Image (cartoon, rainbow, N blue to C red; front, side):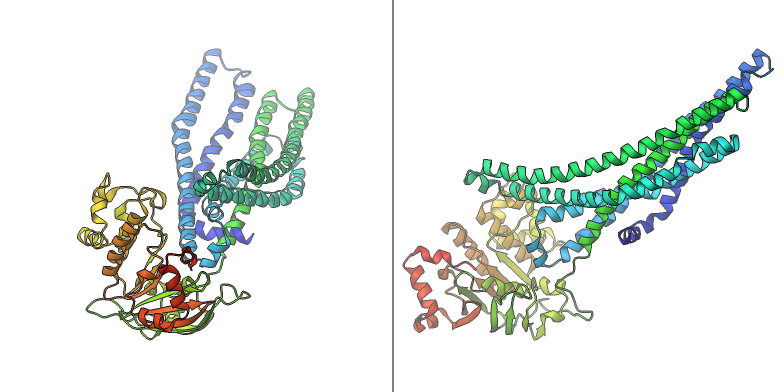
Length: 595
């Protein structure tokens, strides 16, 4: 039950509202308990009484008037506020939990996202959290209301006839036995069903994202079969859960039906003997419904709570995922030039080795590299040489396995992650744009930027003109991943974002490799302006785009094998020279050198 205790930490700020909701609920459920007493009074006292006919009618009118007032004027607002507060509290608690989970998933390591599908993560944040709502409404409110209702009903019944009340309660112990027997297994089946649903959602998310690939390879029938298998796996788990749930309800409802039979038999005998009035018998039978209806809800709540707790377990399993990259307790910030607000930008890799998993093979071996402030350094090499792995260490997407990386003489592990990344701008081959407006996508570089700064950044990136030609200009929605834009337009939006950020260090990872020559020329012009005055690292496979670099670093098998300018490396006639000759002669072999 540790999940429940942890969940209650989210509930605690709203405990006052929950108590108010329960109090209002007691009034709501208490009012109908007056009905059997009213019925008993009319049958046993008012109708056969010695009063004249006119006086009986007068009493009946006053009695009905009072009942109508209670059941309409009083109960209506009670019903409204009980429902409103119950939904308000549960919605607020889920709001807080989702915010907490979103903050958590932003801090999870790249390793976690490499190992888990996007659909699975979304299922944890949306479906599992939503499933816990029943714990709030049922476990923290309705259960108490039903228990109080049962207590009040038993008290009234006991006041009317103690022995008949004991007969009514004789089947209660069977409930405890059934709950203990059925619900332990039901919780496990619920967890399995939730896991199968998350897997199905993850599979669906991937396939929807990959529709262009599926169509281009004419894989529709093949993917339908694969989805059918995944869907069948979920169906199997769902039907197993349904079967056990049906056994549970069958047993519980059978037990419930025994009690009225016992009451009718014993109460009928008492009426025949003259020891019980007909009004009491009818009232008792009505109270049985008032007693066993909340009791059924309590038993059903066991199923609901079992499902909610299983979702809690999955939710906290996600929350317990450890962060691979954490700030030290005394982590500081990088020193900046007070005039420009930028760092100087000196970067040193000192004997850096790296592997993605503790037990895996090293992908970088003893890297030693110094990049001076304002220097442009290009990193080139064959696919799998370690170029992208090397630059991913700089913003601490991963931490070095051995050695250290320093910026302006400070080990980046001694710097707060947010501060470190605020000084690094990245333009990638496949930049991610969000489905929001062009304005919002650029403002991600500096959310509090003015309109003038926004437009200046767009102009510097050669993006202002095409943005103003969009249907709604800067407020045009770009679609998922910027689907409404061309590749070159997406890159210019991404470059504008970095212009607005104005970082001291710039990383360009294959920023133009997927563009046509016309777009590439425009992007190169923008990148040249962006790199001016900044320490710039360029990862490229098209060597003609990096001949201007102050220094070119050639990597092979996770090691630096050559360093120098374009001319120096050509004169050496080694690895770089061979790569240059391959591309210079127009061979398609040059296309295979992605990192």
